Structure formats: C-alpha cells, structure tokens
Image 1 (cartoon, rainbow, N blue to C red):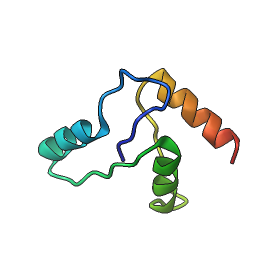
Image 2: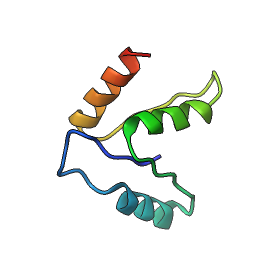
Image 3: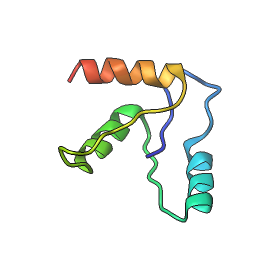
Image 4: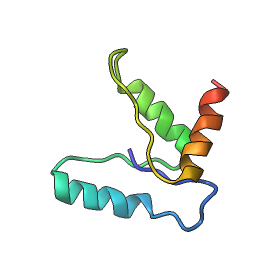
Length: 71
C-alpha cells in the first residue's frame, strides 16, 4: 500500500512508487490518499498472525505512531 506523508512535501509520489513496485515485482499495489486510510486498508487485509510494517521517512513513521496511539 503506497501513500504519502502529510508532513513532507518532498516525499515521492505514491503513484510513481507503486508503478516501480509493479514493474519490478509483477504484483499489484494499492494507493491511498493518506496514511490513516492506508492503515485501515492494511488492517482489513491481515489476519492475527500477520504483521503490518510501515516504512518510509521519519515523518511518515512519526505520523503513523500518532495515528496508532489514538486507536
């Protein structure tokens, strides 16, 4: 799932990252408008045995920590 940080205007565009991912892996990627939506999509697609990993800039990870702390 590719998305963008709301705090980093220099971040790569999720559409471009998803395109590279699809070209290299041969697998489809999802794109969301924001990190909250990406977390919801990921949460609905996993089982209790799965792990969701959030990677990217410190801005994105910091934003994810704030979102997850409020859940």
